[in-house]
Length: 165
Image 1 (tube, rainbow, N blue to C red):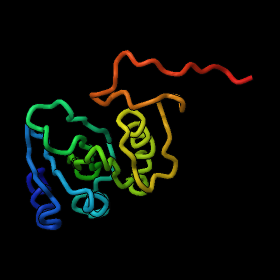
Image 2 (cartoon, rainbow, N blue to C red):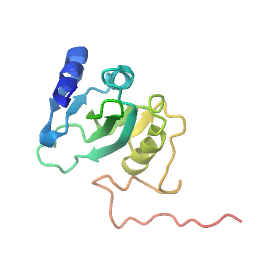
Image 3 (cartoon, rainbow, N blue to C red):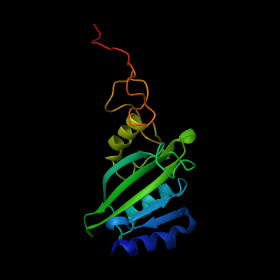
């Protein structure tokens, strides 16, 4: 099954919950609603013709200063899926508002999502509901803010920490 057929299958199954699809530069992408995300990811993982058994990457994008996106949701959470059995790929995106930056966790489908979701929380401040242990991964717990947000002040001073005696 090629990427276009995968996108058509998802549009047929999830209808209006697939907000848009494209294959820009050969990357087949489905943008979905947050409410449909858990069902769509489970469908991609569990259905034999799709069999996306590998979560290659999970990241986020901050569109705060991106031209043309001023009125839309600030963040997109991006999932890169791969099927070992079928050798096909899919990108799934979900748009998230800054005021409600919460996305359902995918840890139950792909255990590696544990680390990816913690990294997205640490760097962007997007939370994952249902995550078993959502805490900072790359920065220390006392760190204030999320440094990959476009409005993070580059000269911000952070609390000094040292070894506890």
